[in-house]
Amino acid sequence: MHYYQTICILSPVIATKANNSSPNAKAVIEIKNLRIVYPGRGPKHPPKIAIKDLTLAVYEGETFGFIGPNGAGKTTTMHVLLGFIQPTAGEAYIFGVNVREPIARQRIGYLPELTYYYKFLTAEELLRFYGRLFSIPQPELDRRIDYLLKLVDLGQVRGKPIKTYSKGMQQRIGIAQALINDPDLLILDEPTSGLDPIGRMKIREIIQRLKSEGKTVFFSSHELGEVETVCDHVAILHEGELKTLGSVQALINQYKMDLEKIFLKVIGYPSAN
Amino acid sequence: MHKIIAISGVVIKELYRRKDFYVLFVLTALITLLMGSANFFGDASLVGYITEIALLLIWISLLVISISTAARQIPSERENRTILPLLAKPVTRGQLIMGKFIGSWLAATIAMLVFYLFLALIIWSRGEGPKISTYIQGIWLHWVCLAIITAMAICGSVFFSAPSANITITLIVTSAILTVGRYLNLLAEQKPEPFQSIIYAIYYAIPHLEWYDLRDSIVHKHPPAPWWAAGVVTLYGTVYSAIFLTITWLRFKRTPLINA
Image (cartoon, rainbow over all chains, first blue to last red; front, side):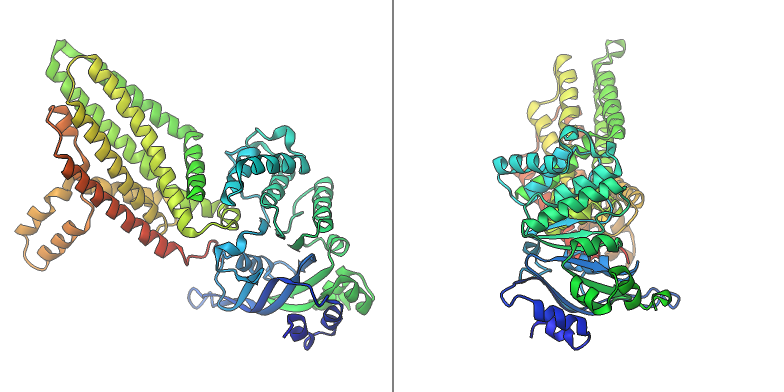
């Protein structure tokens, strides 16, 4: 059964999405009944359910916004997709390969929420290192490094250690490392968090460019205006539960309000009513 | 294999871009140089003692360099979260462990070669030194010993989250094995049961690092040990390193990369 069809039982909005789905579209991400429970640490810290039976699919070429308040389980879901966390129950697949297999990450680019890179390396060394992990041949790697440093406007500082970069520059080198293998799927965890308006605009431009190239982008964000502008589809997660899922336009048409208000309504924020 | 080499390359780069490493490196090189070149009262035998002290210093420095480098690798990757973009690539945790091990071991190897080269230049520039074959065998076995110590420190790093605790414990255990490991069987003979069996079990379980220490043979200009024996000890070291790395992998493969 189609995953959207499964969820249609739960939400009328998803039915719209299911109707709009191209029958030939391939699922790039498939999450089936995913459950994450963090074990308790004594009576004062009982087990915590981070994700409650999440089922969703993201299709080829989609720009998919994964939104929810802090602690909703967005990053946890992304960490499952990347194999960082083992699910308590359920399965997740990327390009049809179980995420437990390292090969599932061959066609993925990942940008973490904060800049977690080797600060003693230069931008060029960092990209070369990550490129070698994908076994990219040397001439091709040289070409990609040049292209990406130009794309993220870091060509002038390519020989300087990352520790000397500003936050915006570090976020841009993060984008470059996520693109080093020319991935078919990008997983971006709050790519614009903490950036100034110019930095946010640059990241948005890069996402738009990737979208126009037909890449699948799965990203979380608190910038709902940005999600509304950039994304085709969204999923709203709250306290580990999928509250709604569907195309941005279908949601706006159904609720007759902007995405921010829809979000507040769906998570049950009082002022939204 | 190229993924392992890429990871180990970053380990080496990190070590050689750290200022604290250079302090230890330059200090040891300087003391080795001074000790080796000293010539009190023109007494040749005194130079032998000084060479012995220089060798001891090399052993201590390399112990500190290899343990402190290896013990930090996985905890700092987790603490700084650089492990996230790294393992988001098609890299297995086994490859990560091997890369960290080889990188730490090679970094210590480079330091070791420089130290021994310094010492060799000093010794042989002053006339008759130890037998070259013994000296080479000493370096070889020291190198194998560093592999065991590095693997032990990497293994400790997946059990102790704080690198400082791991460094301290590994340094104590390694020093204890080097100094009293060889006497454990003699101690066991003097003890009643069940202590005897326990001490014997420890004696047979620990890696006997003292077998790799040829300082006395170098200082006293002894001929090298038979090469077949060096080969057996190398095999023994390889097995112990593999055991420590396997334990590391078994522990690390299911460990969540970040805490809830």
